Image 1 (cartoon, rainbow, N blue to C red):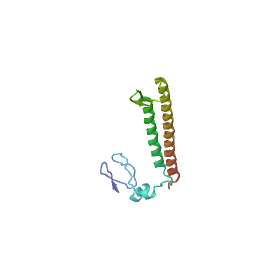
Image 2: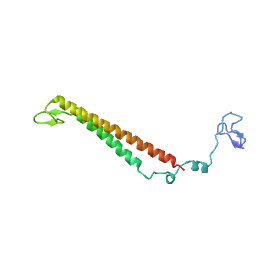
Image 3: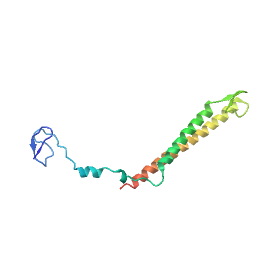
Length: 132
């Protein structure tokens, strides 16, 4: 006999429901079963190739290319004393050149973002495939 945790009445050891209060009795797990379900750090698989580090590097390169692209598009001065992102004499040509540079840097950022996501996917697929 065991005691119902809700109404404190004595009930049969094998019953799943209390006959007095009609509450479902939670089953107690053994400590060994609970420890078997948890994965310890020594059992966690770590891939040979450092996919996490590569994905972080790709993410940093992606952000860097986005910042450089915005710098090329937004920062422009073509004065005799100060020239920033000025390549030729005409303003219109410089705007065209800088917008092309910006598009190129944004494209590179997209490529690095795709590589970053790919590295993360490969890492997780490798971990899942080698799970014990």
